[in-house]
Length: 196
Figure: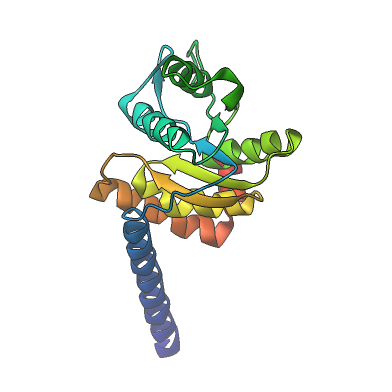
């Protein structure tokens, strides 16, 4: 009985340390900007309101437009499907917004079936491969998303750098993301995606 109590204590301590270390990594990742030259900019999806980007999606799209203007990559991939009842997808809303911001049509690729980060990036990898575009990508999302987005991109065969949007990461977002990263590392992001 004493052995079981000790084992349980060690297991709890290891779990707490694992979660704490993951939180520090997520927090640190949210403070980094690794933007630089790439073969494609990938904008992860976020809510859209009847074809108009939400503030979260708009911040991501604005960052992608700035990166494109700076010559970071010749192509932008906008991603994201729709929720039940939506008339438009997140990908289409992103495409329409960037086109109206002056990004040429030939520089825009659209992914419209992704329902989470894994499916968006997996589909993006296929889109880039189909067009013989390299896998060196600059992923744009909210700062708190850096660690998980980069890990998923690597899992689907992309070579990512991360460029955060201008939004600040809240403690709630960091905590939620810590749980997602901790679980994804243990179970694989692909498996977690299939459960949600």
